[in-house]
Image (cartoon, rainbow, N blue to C red; front, side, top):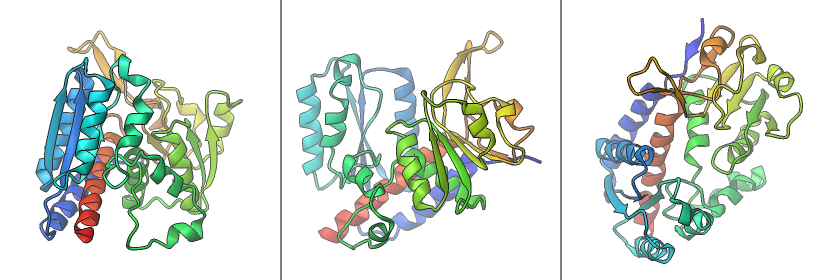
Length: 299
C-alpha cells in the first residue's frame, strides 16, 4: 500500500501551529510580496501566498509592479523595504520579466538576509555548507533561514515518519532553488547523498539504488516507474504544465515523476499538485515568523 505524502494536510498542520505561535508574539509579522508584471502563474502563486499569510495572522503587503519597471526602480523598492521596521520578510516572485532576468541574482542578493523569507540569499546558502559542529552552535544573535522548497521536502518526510539518517538518497537536479541546497541539507541530516544532473550517466541505474528519491528538474515525468526500487520513497518537486485535450483548460499539471507508474512500486510519494507546493508556502510562512521574532528580539 503506497502512502500519499499529502502536502495540503501537512501544511494545514503547520499553519495551525504558526497561528498559535503568532498569537503569542509582541509583533505582527508582515511579508512584502513583490509581483512584477502579469504572468498568470506568478499571480496565482502570489495570491496563494497572500491567502496563506492571512490565514495564520501574517500581514501580506502585495506590491503589484509594472512589467516594464526599471531595474533601478525595483532595486530602490527593495532597499526601502529593507529599511522599513514594519516589514519583516520580503519575497520577490520569480520568474522576472526578460529585461530583469540578467539582474535576478543581484536583486535577490539585495534583499536583506534578515528579511529573506525565501531563504535564497547567499548568506543562508553559505550557512548550509558550514561544518556540522559550527551549524549546531547557533548563537542567539544569528538568524538562520532555509530555502522554502528543500525545507518543505524534509518537513513532509519528518512529519510522516520517514527517517533519512543512514539512507541512500538521490537528488536529481542541482539548481540553486532546490537541488543544490537540498543536497547540503540532506548531508546535514546524515543521509548518504548522490547528486545527479543533466550530465549524469546511467541515471536510471543510479535511481534504482536509492531508498529515497528527490526530483527537481522541470522535466515532465522524467523519472519512470521502473527506475524506482520497490519500497522507495519519492519526493517530486516538479510542477509542469502539459497539453491535455481531455481537460477543459487544455492542459494538466504533472510532476517530474511518472506518478501513476511510480505509485505501483514505491512505499510513499508526494502528489503533484498537492505535495511540495503547499509545503513550500508553509515554509515561507515559517521563515517570515522567524524573521519577525528575530527583529522583535533586537528592538
